[in-house]
Length: 242
Image (tube, rainbow, N blue to C red; front, side, top):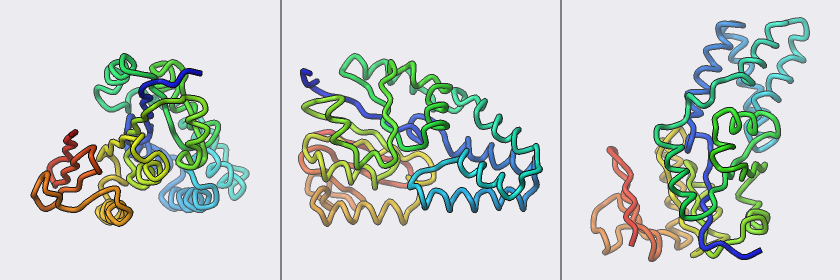
């Protein structure tokens, strides 16, 4: 297979689609169907399962919750709520035109984490599956599967767009100068100051970022080597490409 000049890799949750809003709707539905105590228990199970699996499994948590409440038919309504959710309504504005624009530059691939039922369903019902012409990869830990990504979509360079700095940093360590990372500051992970600062500090220590470089002499600036200046402020995130 002839390598492409560039392949664009796009995360889904809180990158192309407002997953925090989906979760808020699910919380509301659980409270209305079961009450606050049962809603709290579901999320306890959800977090336990995510710790075990390494990814979010909404239907798996519901199945475990069912073991504790085997006689409650309301659980079927929650399952249908998830499977029939109008995910297309939760796409961020401009996502589909953006994908269409990127496709003129190179292949666009959804690169996501998740289970084998709900995550594909979300991508399909949102319209993203069709938008990328079926180029969808869903792994347990995508940052550990870059060899498989490269085998399926060989390229001289990759661009990864994600809301998790941890993922971007892990991928950068593998592909180094072949990877351009784009951090979209959307969703709860991207707005958690502790997570952001911890990841940026690690990137600076490993040499991928330099604090307060001469290129832009302002506190709060970090620059990726020879590629981008990333300016973080309370108002915005600016990526200045060299």
